[in-house]
Length: 131
Image (cartoon, rainbow, N blue to C red):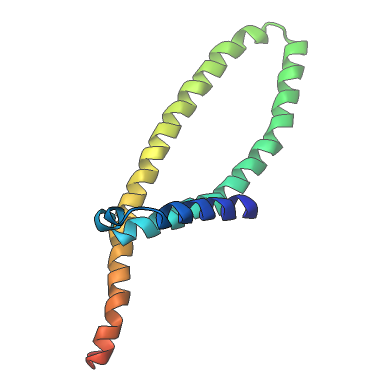
């Protein structure tokens, strides 16, 4: 988790710092902050949990399938349709999950941009005696 996260952050930071100036003129700061925070949250939180769930599920599933095939050879014929149904369902889920993540980042970007502008303006408000 930590090694992958720091490596990912380092690569992302390196590519942002090497980006041409035109990139920063067309990309809002909120979008950059959103990208850093959401991708690092996935790397830090979701990925280790998913790997743990996968590793905890593989042995019981393999054992159940092996036992099923030995005790009921007719069940082997049912496996391909079930596996196909699982594939179609997971493909549909992953596509909509990616769309949702993109929409989530898109809605978070203006909020982070506004927050950044507010933080930048606080000094001006304080020096003017308005706060």
